[in-house]
Length: 347
Image (cartoon, rainbow, N blue to C red; front, side):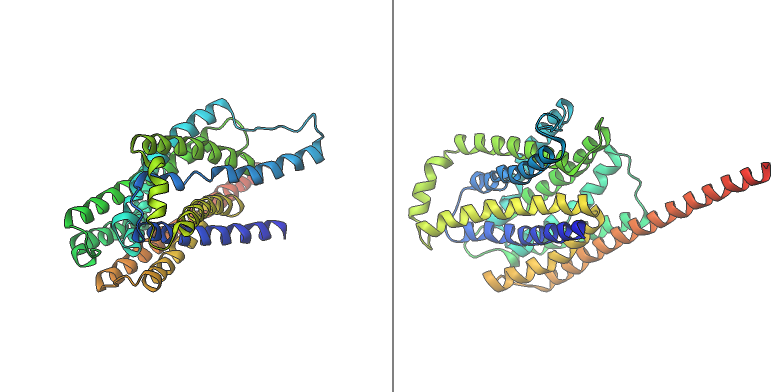
């Protein structure tokens, strides 16, 4: 019962962050925000929030094991170095995908980000030797087709006052961000596989904390070079909906993105990556509808077809995973049955 309660809590956090993050980021830009490095920085700067569940877990260990036996950290030096490297990639990814809310409607950038599954599958094959089923390959084709359709017919989706060059730059940057995200997931899995200890939820949170710290440091350097910190007060004073709401948008953005991250790792730990993917697939059209309602974005036929292809890609991918799991279980059952038969005959 406790596990189910924690799973539901993480699903709620994931849903709120996954829908709210892109929407609040878009709100920052359409009301006068112009700092892409700042937007990317906000995606991980709230990583200290992870200290809350980590502290709770530590005090629980102290209560059970005693102050002397309770470990403060579980992450090893090797895992720390790996997480730091992924953190740099995460910082770059944050910068790239921030071009989506800056230059593209939320509905378009969300659909492009759906191609992350295709890139994740590709890098999983290369890095962790994951086998792709026919359903997985079909999923990749559907997702890439949907993104290509948006690229070819994107001019009608271009926000007013934005040049074709800016729109296409945002499109290309968002696709590159999807590639980076697709690389990060297998790399994180690679850390778990190569870990020389049992990976617990506490270890996962510690790894995510290190990733967030180094991603924030990467974006902080970009902000310093671009003089974003000096520009924040000036941008706040000129913000369309007021200075106080400007800072409220920034804080809300940071919290929502962190909720998405915490919810994601929680769903995977307490259930499976399959469930997290299914939830993500369900949230895609929800984000689309919210963007149309809140920001009055256009909803052309191409977007409807792209949503259909994206959902079809998700369903195909996870149906293939389910079938593969059933096949492996049948294979293990047959092996066990054959072993039992051989032993019985020898008796």
